Amino acid sequence: MGEIIANFLALLQRSPLGETMRSAHYLYPAVEATHILGIALLVGPAFTFDARMLGVGHRAISATTAARCLLPVSHIGFAIAAITGVALLSAQANVVAGAGSAPWKFGLLILAGLNVAVFHHGIYRRVDEWADAAVPPVAARAGAAISLLAWTGVIIAGRLLAYT
Image (cartoon, rainbow, N blue to C red; front, top):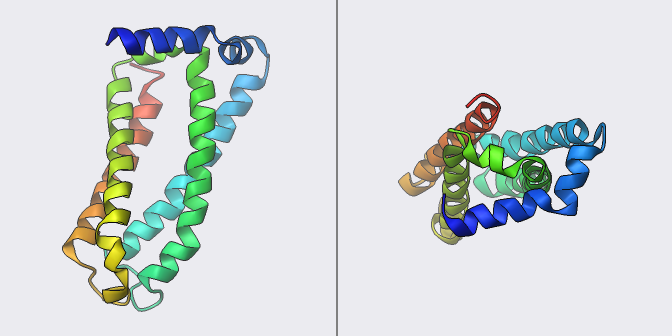
């Protein structure tokens, strides 16, 4: 682990947030439960949107309607998961960072984020051309597949943090 990252993690763990997360009796489990709810709000709508990009429900809902209805909920879930994730990490940052699944979780989080950026600044800019298509363009389907795999990996690696 790089020295800059190690220093950041030590600072985070020694921060008032880290101290509070470790010392307040029921705070950690409450934040953890909120983190799980945030993940559900993030991944549920994202997976549903990804399924639409893969052609599921193409007759029932356009890609733009799916995006308009699902992605704002996913964004709220991401904000909740990110905030609570930092709080959880602060409680024992060095231990978490040393877990074998930590590089996988954080690497897959980066992949998922890059995938979102590429999708929305790439193929989705021309969504009006294919919004009602039974089979969206290959780039949209590839982005959906990457999203499904990346977020599934993030969840699995996150659960493994406690065991590796």
